[in-house]
Length: 499
Ligand SMILES: Nc1ncnc2c1ncn2[C@@H]1O[C@H](COP(=O)(O)OP(=O)(O)O)[C@@H](O)[C@H]1O
Ligand SMILES: O=C(CO)[C@@H](O)[C@H](O)COP(=O)(O)O
Image (cartoon, rainbow, N blue to C red; front, side, top):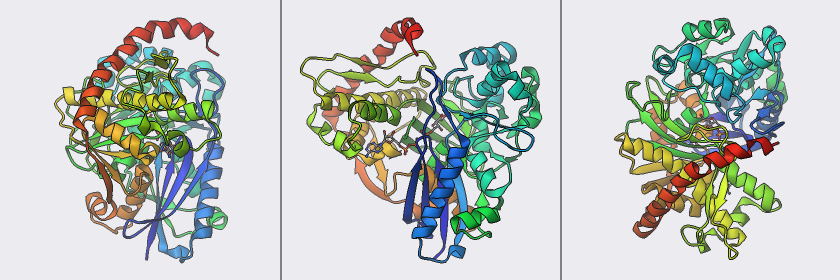
């Protein structure tokens, strides 16, 4: 039997999957690393942590593996998007990575609009200037740390840096490059126009490759440290959402994904780049050949639940915390949560908005709050589904993935709020599976990613919307939508009191 490894460099942890030729996950390893949050709005990670934990994870995987390492034919990657890793001329990291959920760059977004123009930016990149994207972060370092920026010779994204440390080769794939706001999405080339207008040397952009391109082999040092063989083939990999789309079979028009990891994402396949969503949802290159996807993003999805658990039930597991949510009625006995812990992206691109519980009553218990958190996160994802439907998309079936898909009560809440059939696959690790599939396709096991999906992806369970629940959630959703408008100004006025 032959194998491939999918490495998903998430925000909370790196997750490694060893997958065989039948698409079975035969081993799984997860290695966490911390977020560095120096100030409100700041979210950084140390790239060295990613590398050390990935190598430790590979070593763990190989230690447990009783086959011949030569049979592990390929490795590929999925990575948290947009995070800025700046490298000097010797490819040494110049500062902590500034992550996708870091919102310090509101001024730089204005600068981009002032200089490039909103219309032109949308024409070239298909996306608006949002705090989370990479270009505003590049400008922030240029504006605030000019001496350090002087030394910058290249920038890459998180998984590209890890891949560089495993292979010694530096590249970026189109699906991740699309999230930088420096790529001409249609031409699949760096935009010299944007770079020139903003005073950025286009040479700091790395060489571009396709997600399934073979980009090198692992170094002898890495082989020694992990037990892998040097001949193991390495394929570029994709942005975690593009990899998630591959790993859940979102490979043709009409297919939709909901992913609840640290962030939350609703993503839909697009066969072409000529639809017009007026920048309301992101429009990126897919990891599959000649394809695109549109998506809406909740910045703090699983992260809201993690925050709630760490703050109010630190010693308990997620399963224990969620054990009694099914005993709480729909609407959490009149309690509503909006998940704006670090600001929001879709539909409100707003770095200042903050979360709230509305309707706290003396009768509420912890389980009411827990269910309200699950419902609030899901309402937020439903805002993206609402935009897709308003723009004529038919969304009746959704594949659910990510840590949030581990809980069946939450999957039923998703079916009821989304008013769609929700499918849970055998592995909830869509991005890691997508990375493994890119390696399997790259190794020539299949003629297409679609053929690989047909063999690898198995449905585990289906959750159907329950009519009475759908009706109740429709009424609650309109109240949820009002909370943003009612709390926008309050959040703004509370800003000076933040850390
Ligand atoms: N057993 C569980 N039930 C429900 N949600 C869970 C469970 N375990 C983890 N999660 C949620 O999944 C999130 C992590 O998902 P994951 O896809 O691993 O994230 P990332 O790729 O961002 O690192 C956590 O923030 C948590 O909210
Ligand atoms: O910013 C985005 C997408 O635009 C996020 O989806 C990141 O890509 C992080 O993903 P997770 O760590 O939550 O999987």
